[in-house]
Image 1 (cartoon, rainbow, N blue to C red):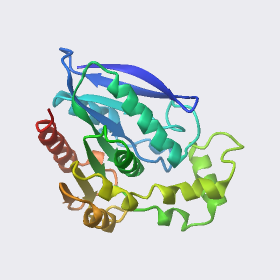
Image 2: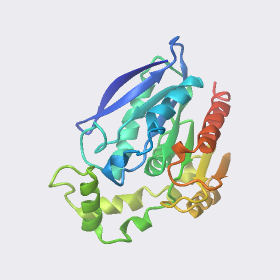
Image 3: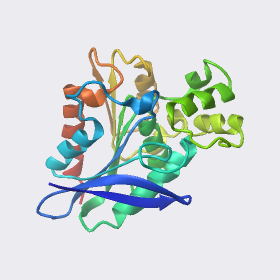
Length: 259
């Protein structure tokens, strides 16, 4: 396996990432890995056994995929400020990057998203037919609960404390910034994925996004679709071997059907 740092530009920002390639360099089906929204201390994991997204990317690569993992704007080493509508453009730029890689085979990349990254994946896939399939883990059906603890300025201030809104004059309008979450609600777009395959994976004890969100998305989605509820699992499904194994097996089954 070969992995290397990469970067690409969108909206005048430089986004950082890493691409994982098979050692022999032969073209492989592609997976774009989309992380969730950090909610505290950049979501640094306290369990040293959890290698987080890099470990997941390596595992998927070993199963026969070219994998792109990147940081959305405002997170990690990527420039900019957290903006959910901006994240949809970031993912579009990531798809552009994958499309130019000679190591990519198949009809189009699969998107593997977690939480907010899953929501963005569904929105982008609904508008971009280059996406061949979507695996959405712990995906919210909508973001109505985001503002339950206060108004738009309070939500912005929360993410400023987290460290993903960095510039003091961003956003120009806190209300418009918060409204963008409503505009990308997966429940409004999930039906547009069909006939491309959709996998929904959710933990039965998700403390952040209730498992009922998965049921609502599943009911709204067209075929082919599959929903897997992981008994006893919480929100961070990348830490659950059952969830990871489910996703990897499903990705492999979809890659076999691509030309």
